[in-house]
Length: 532
Image (tube, rainbow, N blue to C red; front, side):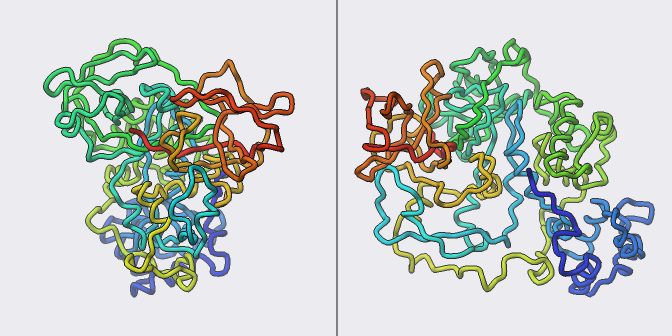
């Protein structure tokens, strides 16, 4: 369940009205002056208007200001909208978490732009003699925690310009290389110009966008500025598409983050199995049209979208996140935005929209002036005294941490609040992470270019299913008597642990005496791996 933060629970030591008063006072403002400025800027009949008796309304237990009023507080004070939303108990990163968590019939772009740069995250440094790890090793043996760091101080590892998408269950053209629910990283520099000029190998996977939405697929050039997306395993229709009128190549997929539990079988819907006529791209600027097109591209009916919002409401334990099918229809028809930010969270999550795009369509976003951060003493974050100071790069001795960051290129920090979902475990720590990127002869193709794995150490009973395909076989981490680790499919048979290699090279089955020669440490439930 996602935690539901309310304005009455976020900062219990200071009443909300007093906190708002302090924030406004830091800008030499009062609610009365804010009310006057909102009337002058938006008009008293506007939803952005803030009444002078705002504090009286706020003391009512059921009152929550509208999203438009929160926007007015942000514009008038100059403080960031995300910070003002946090004051009233909303976390914009919930949009990202929900987009990662919720199942999706079609591929969506994940909004990874919502992390607060002032937030602190756990940080680590290399342990001594941990520069050249073996093929597989627990991260706890390679790294040690040194205290939190602000995201702003590690921007060189977080702002590399990559896109992230989640593969849908109905448009998995790259199956089984990518499976439904896989989160992929996309390098936007490797776009159509890269494809045309470099002519990469045929197994490269690209994220493309056309009038049916997004999908990850191998791409072939048919003629000048004409390409086709190839589904090598499933029977998707192969439609020639003109660049850039009918298709855009958003970039090449270079990394996959895959959950290995509850893998979903892909399907081929009728509208993608039959030949369809591509449409020229239209630029939608009105909110209603954006919502309608996004829902259509995700192959969602209004009832399905309403059911998804109900599911979100149940996860939060808050009815404000729920929307009816008729309300969704009204938003699409009229272009009006919801009054409650909780419903905007649901819309962005279910429709796979970036919050910035939603705000721009509302006419309330200002990309050139994102606003100033509310000071820490007014919006408590990690105490600055607890944050580890930044160490100059020249003073850092090369070690495993630096090697890991170099291999990852960019840290997907948007996943830090979704690790429980990826691991299917409410409690996850550094002990559950393993390095799997050392040189060796992997016994499973998914591990051939692997980097990191999450291991559920409570799943110690190994099962092998001869009738299941490779992509559905569970993978286990095995500790051998000599102290080395092995990752492979295996099963317990008559007191023995039988390892079933699925590597690209031939390996005969390996048999260990269970709990004597080797034992299962746990099941690998998620992996991060490079793609060629």
